[in-house]
Length: 86
Image: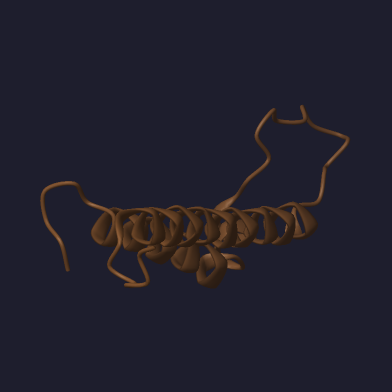
């Protein structure tokens, strides 16, 4: 039996779980940022209501969540690249 941590199934399992854990955390951060944006948008019913109601002021409230999403996405690409290993 193989007891080394460098064995292929062990590495594959941990690569898979860490990859999807990072994706999950990035997606949750994105959802949190979207909720903040939607909370800061108020509809003006005297005018035509836009399909995508995001304004620059509302979007600025979620910059930290969106930055975290970008950081998580780039982390996945950096750690799990096929050609380059960290």
